[in-house]
Length: 297
Length: 297
Image (cartoon, rainbow over all chains, first blue to last red; front, side):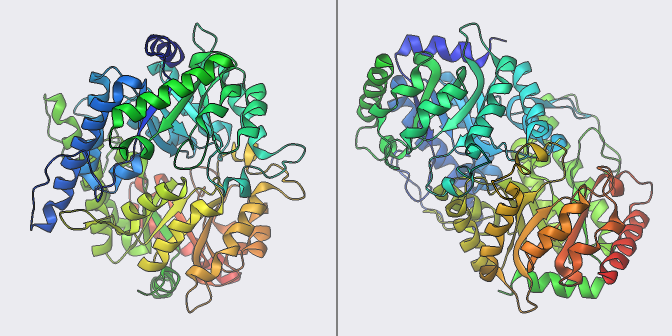
């Protein structure tokens, strides 16, 4: 299987885009789902909502997809609809693949090794059962939480290596509260720099032919001052850079992320595309801005 | 709604137990599922496996449940079976409730505030939709990852407060790799002590009438030296203490956790019960050992 880093690099070059369409569907605000049928049956609410969520995401993929290289479904938004939500998630992954997009599952999983292996089966592997293997979501990459340390990341990396998948490890997230823990001195440098060292230590395992590694990192756009330093510490990692748009990050200030090349950063955007009257145009504007920013780097 | 801390305290007193039955079903090793029908249809594998997983968990609940106060389903083990797995998870939660047990969802979720709110809807709340609200799993407590800081915990705590639920925040996990990050000096004390301070800072929000707080902490049994210190830093938190049994933690060395009372610690056990020829007896032995240990504290 071609490593994620190489598949991404080829697509970035082809589409001249680093945009990742965030899919955070809120069943109370599905402006792209089409006409919604009424239902008095509350037990059917989850089924109805899940179908509408999938339609909404499908319409966004159709409109904004051509300006993007990936989609990033937020698993929380599907899980809250129970089993029908999980079915919708699988359907949305399939629609994205059919549109030529990579799928980055935003799930921020992290657990002790035996459990991490089970999460890896759910995301990029399969689960052996007496009735035959059960395929997981088959995503191209996923986000992971490194608080539990290296041994908890190992099963994820093993599975990603086998599947040709990538991992975006939380290093410095985009929310204000990130400062509470991720910026603590630990002791001679902030904790996020220590997390960056862990990520870089695994870079070989998921490296592609271009030199970029699918052992990636989540580095928020809301503190652009961190980006250059974290790029120094993780010269090969593909960055997933949330926080542009609604959270206040500026798409034209991300140049430092792109030092290793145009495919070394992915910029997710969700509300700023889905809530625009013209998602296709919103995605295209963002694509052009980020592409220019990456070209300067 | 009665706070989780009080509901737990009453049940601990009534059953003289702090044992939490871990449910980590492996479809390849479902010794309590009963006769397994063959199926040649690989698309049906997930459905078949999910039914068998639910039966296995139900049988364990029936046998080991009377010696326990809670179950702890590991969400990874259900997610890897897709939508049918999520349905099995909901069924298992229902079976546990019917057996008078509390449900602690082991999911280790943690995300930026808007997403944390969606996870809270999935776990202890409901999701508004045009077709009516969709109820979440309705668990009594869940595990959470604090790497993203205080603002990312807030929506979880808000939802727990409303639902009378509890949260077990990762502070010092039981795996060897925990030392890589959780034990880093940060700077004058290890990071896990800083996480403990964050947990304690929220104790008021989920405190019950007994003085214990449902703003709890995951504190591994594998490093008993940490337990006394973390109890000092979190005098009101209910501890969830994994790592007993298969991971090497000793059930009779947990006394320090129980300073604030018999209900101030929950001891999950999974493989050591499910893989015993007599789960009821294995659970009862563990119950008696931990109960004695707590009484000495």
